[in-house]
Amino acid sequence: MLRAFLCYASLLLLPVLSKAQPTKPTTTRADSLRGNLTPLRTCYDINYYHLDVKLDIEQQSIAGSNLFRFTATQDFTRLQFDLFANLTVEKVLYKGQPVPFTREYNAVFVTFPQPIRKGAKDEFTVQYAGKPIVAKKAPWDGGFVFTQDTQGKPWVATACQGLGASVWWPTKDHQSDEVDSMLISITVPKGLKDVSNGRLRKTTVLPDGSTRFDWAVRNPINNYDVALNVGDYQHFSDIYDGEKGKLTLDYWVLPENVEKAKKQFGANVKPMLKSMEHWFGPYPFYEDGYKLVDAPHLGMEHQSAVAYGNHYQNGYLGHDRSGTGWGEKWDFIIIHESGHEWFGNNITSKDIADMWVHEGFTTYSEALFVESLFGKKAGQEYIYGQRKNIQNDKPIIGPYNVNQEGSSDMYDKGSVLLNMIRTIVNDDEKWRQVLRGLGKTFYHQTVTTEQIVGYVNQQSGKDLTKVFDQYLRYTTLPTLEVRFQKDKAECRWAADVKGFNMPVQVRTKGGTYRFITPTTEWQPLALPKVTKENLEVDTFDYYIKVAAL
Image (tube, rainbow, N blue to C red):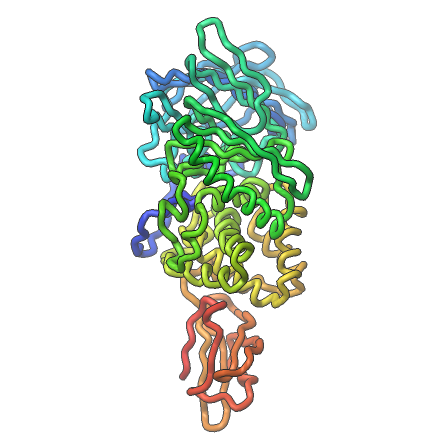
């Protein structure tokens, strides 16, 4: 998603960015409990959840349970799950009996009556209740949104990326362990509907007049994507003939938005899917379908149930983030948030420090969408326009094991970086196969930066590790220094990364670009008849500085 900071981030919404001075990250014990993979978390692998929650809108409270079904990865008697401290754990049940637990900040530690052996498949259930945090400005912060539609009927949603799914339900709140499948049961007051992830399995009217909606998710899902959307929704649907067959398209919108939604969704969704499947491979969740859901916030990439709140207009809240005009021709929230189905949902970073894998690739998908509709030149112009949002305030990769993201530059600088890699590969079809190969190789997996970079290196046939390191781990731009002495010209890179050696395109004015590969040591500039006056360096495709000495 585009959040501010941008976000906690999924860019979306981007408020105006202000220049920030680099600050040393501060972390707390609570951050470490959430971000660190201790043996109390790695001892079990989550296989299945059944989240069963009743929503009390008047009291802005919830009550329910979550079943944890898991496989033991080692012998253990204690484990950790996560639930925000303002919510009460009423009991933890194991084999039908309460078992002891303790709490520290937002972490809950359960002790079992006998050892659970490595390889065993077992389960426990957490019963809980309370008033969850209400988001002040979702989706930039996290929690519940309680509001009303234009008819005065309740309209409720969750958005919790960054803050964490444990803000409203008990879970192992770490991106590295995605549950394989789950059942989401949400009970809502009479006359309202819940739309959650996956496919609607059953609707049950309960004796008190409330209704329970059971949604089955058949694919792995990261827990911040698990969502409820409650309102007076109306439904319409369509079919997309995609690479893996017929993909169901389901749209859940408020009554007053039905006609607007048919027009806006119709104009954007199928072209988006065609572009994303072309560049990244098949939509990753055919079994669960694709949904867009009216949301009382700007939007979020909730897997198979993308939250939409862009008011049925093109651009980002009516504006073009690139400033080029190309972003005014399509609905930013539909394209960006749906792009996360490939990067963020299909491929998920193990640690949110590597969130650039979600946001860099997804922001880049916007430019590829522009290219699909209007040609490569338009897509490249869009990427160049994204530079105006880059702050270079702190590294894109954040500190590991403490639940902290890096700079919001993960969006636009991440996109610009990927376009430079495409330029260096210098073979658009090979580059497309690299992108598609990522989706296939890491299908429904959690990954690290090293895995992504290693794959790109392997498939491109180029060692681009130092290039990724410079742009992801440092804030300064590499500078191509060129010095002219009598009848010769020499060049080198000035960069933070030792031995930085990014290939770059240069030419004499009016000529054809050719690649050179400078290092951090002075070497001859292999460009015949070059002078200080006629040297041109490709600063359109490369986000660099140039210094002629």
